[in-house]
Length: 144
Image (cartoon, rainbow, N blue to C red):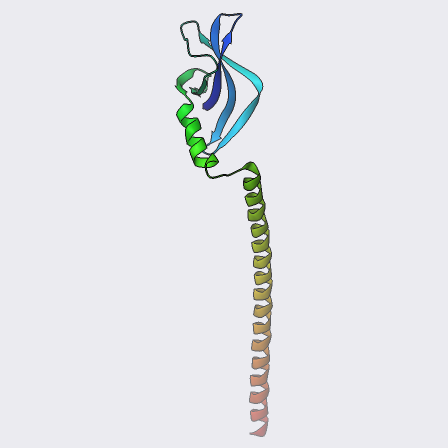
């Protein structure tokens, strides 16, 4: 699983560690890790302190890969922040989409109701036509 982490120095153990900041849940969704989650890197690993990194962890918690997060952060800036997309804008768009969904649901329910009403009227007209035919046929038979 992919994590965003910051390199920190563990003074007590005299080695670097990763403070996990966020976890990738899906392609476009990340969850913040609120609790202090740390992974020791070992004394031989001397990554720059305070550096942001992307770290891939195995299901057992072993580090599979670490890469500097600079390019990833720049991609986020290019993709989302240069066009002025703010959290407020996204919230407004989500609310607009929800209003459209509700409106479409109501319209769909109204169309379904009208369709049922038309079907009922069609059946009534067919029944009247059949009654008229029977009456006509019965009237013709009485005359003969």
